[in-house]
Length: 328
Ligand code: 8YV
Image 1 (cartoon, helix red, strand yellow):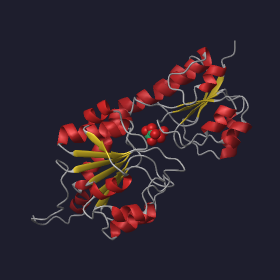
Image 2: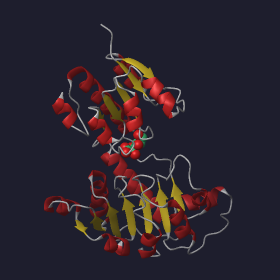
Image 3: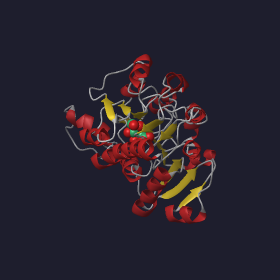
């Protein structure tokens, strides 16, 4: 019997491709070719499943043009690249990779906050440029992490991981803003207190963004919000480009409206707004918060498990629209 055909839209671990090949005919973009939407649609003809990463848009146009498609398995917890209502309407299952990346991503968020507060990359650039000739009392003097107020916008699993690190490891006062309050037991475990967005902006010494991207969270942090923050505050974005207005942020960094920022995600990435490259008080990383080797492998395997489970047995570990499963 012929195996069903799937597309792997981006390069991924060879061992994961080998696993998938046990169940499917696999067409894989191991050379990382940049496909136009028309090329992606062409590649998807006759494919029942697709393995995507966060940059691969699966919108209504693609779904309509790919009638054979039954599942889109994202190797990411965020799924703003999926038009989920369009998938549900067409009976296509969407899956993501939650949980397996929570602690790794929280580690990175914390590391980026520390690097930002303590001016680590700025001082390294200074050193590499051969500018270090003497010790000075105020050389790259930054902000403290321990004992400071940690603000978290978006308090899902990753936000809670960052809160726990801050409260238990560094004695930080943790405040958060989220649409819903955490239950009392989780709040107590994270030592976190719900505040209004206004209070979060006003009170945080270090503000970390961990909310999902949507039309509602587009430019949740713009010029008006940055103006409410302390001039000594830092801002870290490990969530999605577009949540911060990057032009407003670059201006705020240049004008010292806030002290510094740490950014792992950007509007229009992998391109960056040039202004961000020209301000010194920003730590920039290329969307790597989940990138430890074991975690990236776990994410890839979970996406593969979803494809295998759904296409061979009709179930998936981490469905985004489980109503599709119930209709089967
Ligand atoms: C991914 C991420 O590496 O999981 C997410 O939502 O942003 C990252 O972990 C990225 O989206 C590539 O798929």
